[in-house]
Image 1 (cartoon, helix red, strand yellow):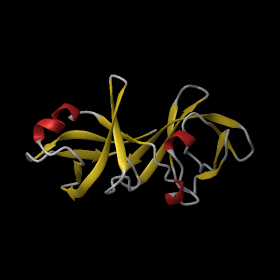
Image 2 (tube, one colour):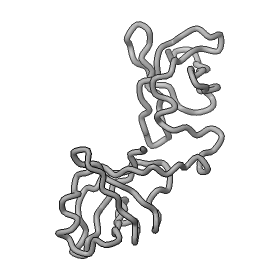
Image 3 (cartoon, helix red, strand yellow):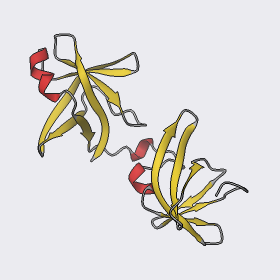
Length: 162
């Protein structure tokens, strides 16, 4: 299950919704299924139409033709179970694959744990909680990030980064 967006509002009176995209991948495609969870109730939708307007996705779900049909979904997150591994480049990772891993130097000495990935205009920053409890931000680019395996992330810091 991947959280891919949030329904922020309705759009017009014909059952369209505005969705803020939370995914780095193209997940809002005609014919694809997405769903919401509301009080542990899963509601599945098939995307009938989609377009981008002012940075938001305007999505029409199949079978929802009136504003009153989509009002209950306002404010809910949308999810997808679709595996997008075929869209991943060699140096792309799912958020879940990074968070919680040990962060180590090239000599295998432990720096801390990866706690978050923060999106900035230039890309992403890896937030690391060091062993002393302090947090540092490391640019998530190949110049600073080495190999990532099942247990750890190897970093290549420059002087003053940590």
